[in-house]
Image (cartoon, rainbow, N blue to C red; front, side, top):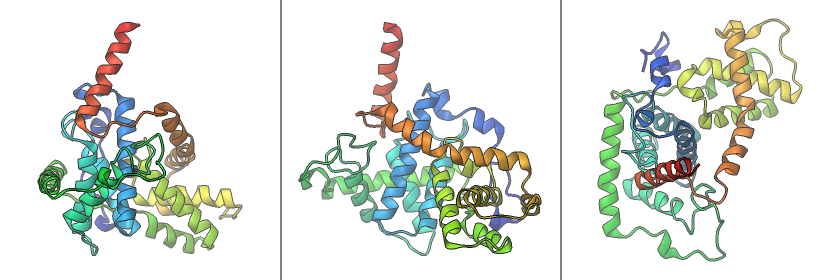
Length: 298
């Protein structure tokens, strides 16, 4: 990651062009579209787990950014070595530990066992066939023996994340900044603020990795611009975004990226259909092998 810029507590270390061009997963032969799908599913898994653990959205968002950062660049983690589900759990556990809302390994692992159950999970990319009327508790209860082994994995992956990120766990979020900007622009109506937060939260799942390629102030400005336009709220007629250190080109890119999220999410569901997204190494290997066989058959 590049060095953190001037206002350390309001900015992030961003991914460099070299890191964005090549990932450890791509070097290991993971197709880029498969990597994107798994990152997207992993971010959703982190969000769902955080909600079930009753964590605040800022903790969940920081965990998703940490999860995303782990896979970036040739020095990042590879999907052929690390399971996305394990990295998701460790990122959430680590972020919570460093916050005012720490949670126990057992609580984290109980939630992930439920969410990863192919019979009981409410998540489309884990259980695409949908929930049965009465899912068997045996499919999502973590036994004591499994807990002990999974706890060791959780702690090992937590240490791996820290080493991979150079122990830089700082994540600045744009949500508070956006509220400040809305007040400065005299546009802080509940409807606009709600829509701004919706865009900022959706960006956490962006295939363009917006939270690791753009600073929080730029994300806040783009979300405000788009939300105000959607809600019919008039903003200053001048190029007000420049006051917040965002140029027109960056604003345009971010607005388009935010608008594309709905279609991206739909496309992912259509792409996988009734197949679960690979969340462990063996499943990733099987998907890669399947694709190779299809290519050879053609």
